[in-house]
Length: 310
Image 1 (spheres, helix red, strand yellow):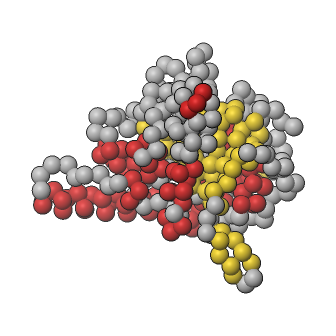
Image 2: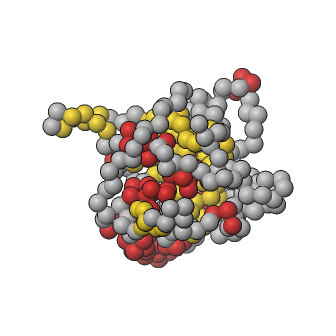
Image 3: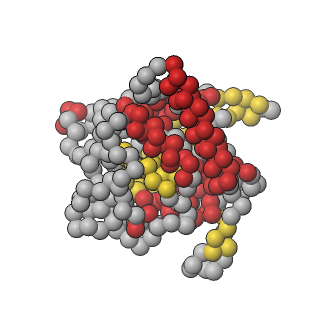
């Protein structure tokens, strides 16, 4: 798929909303935890034994109303996507690389990772991160139901690059924490911080864009909305030639592209930070028309990280 040229300017900021606060998501996932505990108690009264986990596609997910979870799974498991277990672009369909590592940003209940593993055939190390500890608690609880023998709270560390096939969930603030210092962060054969083959964002950039929080940019000393720093932070989390899939309901396709390929979307001067994002593909959704304008209710854009900065 062909690359897209870099837009020259960022879109206008969104007005801040409660959905951009950590307190909102803490309450949201605590409510899910409380409801799950109530359901488990009721099932325990009715019959002995552990309850059957829900089908991953039945878990609550953003953008369910337009079928985004199913469409993204179809995209990531197609025979044309290079990281797909079904990829047929080399050696007549025989994969030549290890199972790709996956990082889910703003993992919520972990549904995206469960679907990739159980329905998509992705077998590599998967890590879901969220700044809400309640979200991580919920995802770990569900993970124990899907994979009873797994320890979903332990670091995904095997002394190498983290390709041990486990699914783990960790608390991480994507703006204020340094992920490469975390014990679960993948490392190369020499022990240096590596990155992930595939990074997922299903509404996390939306939530960050709705935050009123600002941070000071070290190079200029200027205060900036945290959404301005997010694309460059994510770029550092993706391996060279790796992929980022962003799904948004607050930004159009062109605006998502502008945010992640614009002038501010450059990585740090590290082995994984050099490079840029280029558009690899887009997922199509039903088009609606309102007031003479046509558009999609959701935008999903897949980026590939290329080496070099020009």
